[in-house]
Image 1: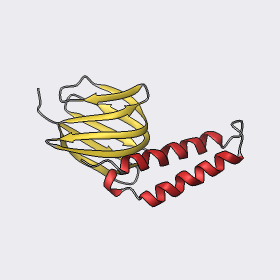
Image 2: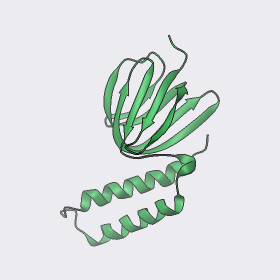
Image 3: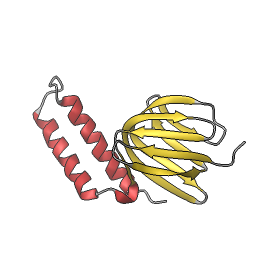
Image 4: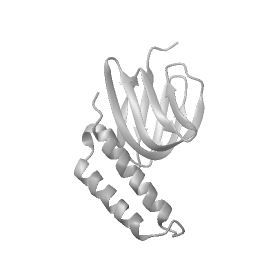
Length: 136
């Protein structure tokens, strides 16, 4: 069995992370999952949440807003809609997005076409704020 697993986190704009790691956890559609070297192969969709990367005695955290993950015994590829390393998150921008979404939610009905989009914007902002405070 391998001692590490290669992880790639990629968005349409750039590669966010690419390195060999000890463990990865991610927010799958059916719940959080963890991957160690030698894991069984699978593909899953990813929800808004946090990816945790363990490498040696360090942990890295990534705010992710959805996408897909392909897990193989020696590699994990996460194709993310958006992703940001915790230390790169602009907390002021995230707080402004959260406030904007909260204000919009006060003015529309859950029957409105925009409602789900605004709820997701709020979830993304809250996730970015939470992950920004995570340090390895």
